[in-house]
Length: 68
Image (tube, rainbow, N blue to C red):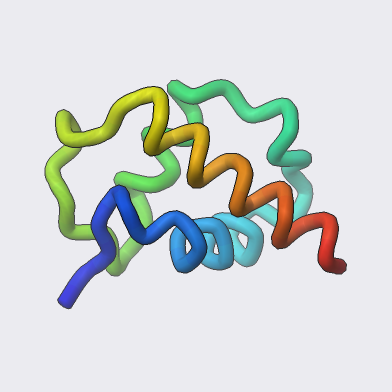
């Protein structure tokens, strides 16, 4: 089963691994949306995202980055 928009923690881990040079606090939602869609295991529909889901992913990514 692939990743969905609601899988924010799993997505955050993959984004941190795929974009280690990026500070997630400064990522635009348009870029975040595209990067999530580009993840190999992501299978959800592009139009199912929204600001709240993108914010949850960004916050999880920030927590992952701060844990380093």
